[in-house]
Amino acid sequence: MSVPVGFDELIHPATRLSVVALLAATEWADFAFVRDSLSLSDSALSKQLHTLEEAGYLELHKEGGGRKRRTKVRLTGHGRAAFEGHVAALRAIVEGAGLPASAETPPPQRHNPVAGR
Image (cartoon, rainbow, N blue to C red; front, side, top):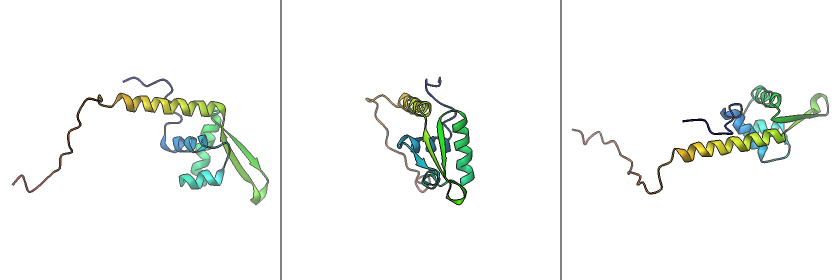
C-alpha cells in the first residue's frame, strides 16, 4: 500500500498529532492549557513544540518576564495545511481498508473453554 498524499511523518506521532489537533481548534493557546489538556510534562511538551516550531508548523510567543512569563502557541498557515492534509491522508487510509458496503460482517466469535470438553 502506498502512503497517501498529505501523510505527514512529522505530525503522525501521537503526541505531536494531539498537540496539532488541539491547536487546530483555536487561534492561540497558553502553554499551560496545552500541557494540562494533553497530560504532558513541561519538558515533554517543550520538546514537541520545538520540533514543530523548527518545521515552521507553529509559532511561539512569550510575554512578560520572570515568574510571570507566559508562553502562547499557535499553528502557522503551513502547520494548519499540514494538519489538514494529514487528516485527509488518515481518512483515505481508513476508508481504503474498509469492506464494501454490501459485505456482511460476521458476528463476533466467543471462546467457550467448556464447549471443547
